[in-house]
Length: 381
Image (cartoon, rainbow, N blue to C red; front, side, top):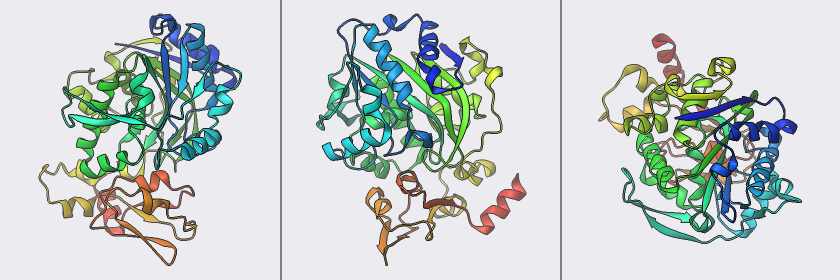
């Protein structure tokens, strides 16, 4: 399995660097034919300024548009962010994340078709059907253009997790609620990736995010572009660079268990730079990554109350909170209510999906661990 890896220190370099990464895989015409309708699927998790490193940078998107156009393809930027999937929400996301800037002066169009259809996933191991947005279903090809980040729920987010944005709006919350077990949720992500089957995956790792990603972490210069025809392989290489092994990232573990990729990045065919040139073992992991359940190797059937006690959980920072209520609106199990214009979390209903932390516009929802929990963690480490 081939993954290309090239250095890219600044965004003005990214067309040249992305072109090189794709050329190492055989060139853009190995993936795109003349006349193909090509959905470019960025990571626009929420309305964030590109400088916050939470979303795919517009210069990276523009570079991919250029490559698709050079191959004779018709590029379409499409995304379904967290929250409502309607014209107003898309307009806000595209504007805030720089999609208009990326498409300006090109033949790319921004998708405003908010329709979706139910599809069957006959080979799915966790789900057998789901809903997918129209532009993805109507496209000839899909390119996943992900962002290199840590993630509070899934440890790491990349090419595979990026395709969760092909599920329309609030349907994402339904899947979170139905699949409240982390491993089951990540197995669903693998099912979805295998169904959509993007022809190419490209990762924006020029500036990434560490700590409590995917939106509330800290910017980190990583200086890399990765590309592969296989998103699982790309994620295996990228996760390895930031210090994750395959068994620590549920999507990767699931892909390995299915035989879709090898268990170590060293078994991949890396083109361009070597993995060792870009290793960043000191990347800060999310607070939720340090899970006592892993350290204690507790049995899968452990009572959910004990699981909840040993796991990190979201907690509002009241001083930062502006009372917008977004956390309440996006909470899949409805575990949050607003009291005196501040969020209150029903811990008994919380499923630790961290959607509230992910979609809080003010980074006011923190990942919290009790004093006793921290003490146990320190002793075990």
